Image (cartoon, rainbow over all chains, first blue to last red):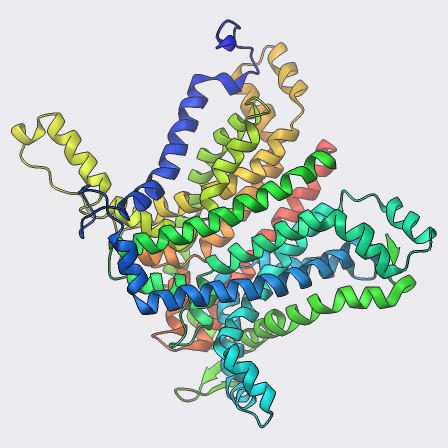
Length: 291
Length: 296
């Protein structure tokens, strides 16, 4: 290494062996449990302690566990639905707060950030209480006299819709934050130029603002996706006994102890979330260099 | 920025979706539990809002005060440990070669995106009686011929105590602490450090008298960002602490599940909210003060 010849300056903390050693130790400790979890999903041993050889049979076991697969599909379905709606609402909110000056704006910003800052458990029980209040009323809604309405609920059952609605409520403020951060780098003169040249409000949005904020929107969407997919607390409270999402299902399994098929299922979820996250980060990265 | 009156249509089109969703699925539910915290159970399913403070009074009884106190000190210790680990990490990343920084930051944040439940589960496999850590300790024990001298290794009971909960919290939240610290340390004007060192202060003095005060906003942000979710945490104490390390989150959950005392659970969760608001106000206060002083 070329750096070895140079002596370390007083501010060259980046090359302090203590700091590097500590950093490596922390990284190892941070990843070791996760690596172990993934490794042991391929371990050919029920008790999951000593390495017995490579197998993928626990992926098959997990796959054949009907309730686990159902919980997984529920989670994915909820996450996709949540992503679509939360991205639209979050983007609108970001545009609103970015573009306009209005009375009590600081208050509105504070309230919009509330779902991000309050403990999850408070939100979970709040939504639980509301659903229990309006539950009966919603049920009559679900099997109402209107035909197409019933059709709608047969495709997207009420309990899934209830969980999705709660997920949207806590994830769209995150989308709004991400999109607004992207918009902060937008040159407003471009918007004015577009309007001066005769473009309508919609044309300006569609052809000038939207292309610019698109990386932020996609990053926000992926964030909403992972938030929804990962959520345990809020689903734990809002899901009825008959509906499971993946984290809630895993929780009920984990309470009974460690077993390799949970490792296999967890590994699948880790891969999905990490792919979404890395994608989101790659999309967000150029915004910094451009801005 | 445009005045909202100049374009009311766009204003309302962008404002209403968020306002609607937040009101229906967040603010109204919160108002409901706030009301419920002043209510009483009249039967197994019915709750009447009577304006009583009995639920809050009950929360201040000794049993619950002890749990609240325990939640606070467990979170405080875990938070302090997070800071002690995250600060050198954030510092190291800031002073590493620029092209490495995004990668190092990504590596730190990545575990944070893995499901909390899965990370906690991963820790169970490490800490349980026949887990990795006990295997490792046994290997060390035998390596030092202790099995010949003293006797066979007795696996330690590492799970289901306060220590396990603290370790779990630190493991889960440490990455979250790095971000605000990194953001402030990166903006730190290094000429202050140079000046301090040039004027004869030692590295140690410079760190405590210059670096720490200048990065205080980041420290405060990080501490609050981590402390609030720790305080309301329910999964980690539930899975790693068992019945020995009950925190306020577990008590609240219990009121809404097994114990079925919703008004009391509502009162407890609102106490948690008040603590949260207090912490946020504190952050805003310290933030505005330090901005005034340092002139950032």
